[in-house]
Length: 202
Image (cartoon, rainbow, N blue to C red; front, side, top):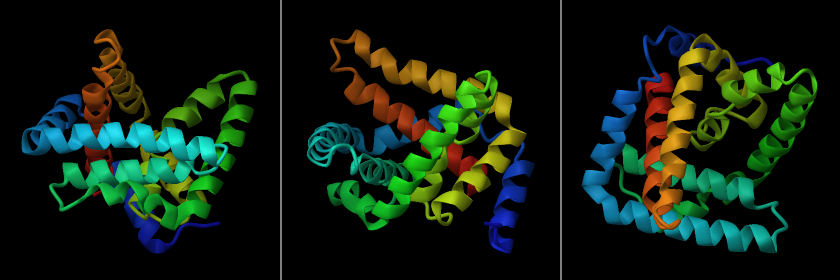
């Protein structure tokens, strides 16, 4: 499916952004969110882990993509200093079909990409890393969101790769603190990702 004029404009504007994956800017934005509501964000992370585990187990994994959408929306609103409560963690169920379709199609295409000499899979893995953020932000249906993000991120692919490496190191650094640290580091890394997404598209 082709992109609408508004979606094409979104891509072109993102491609023209000078440095959307600036690590320092994302760090500062995440730190500002922590300073505003550290406790609320950490509790949201704990609830997110519990809910995703329980609901995904009950649904045999089918509900996991919808829970990811809700988790992202919660952190997007925290980063943007918007009013949000813990019910936002369930908001992804309003997009259950789109989120499940995105997970299935992207999973199949990434698998094919990795089978094809690995490099295509690595390229798509980076180019599509923000697709759930785009679906959470209602850029369009899942296929258009995949294309919007692929085109936008490809222009900044190398800086996006470096950014993703850094936030993954930050996220999993919490494992060193007897696993409890992930309640702080994973949401911080998620907030950094939300910041990069906003700098790219908003």
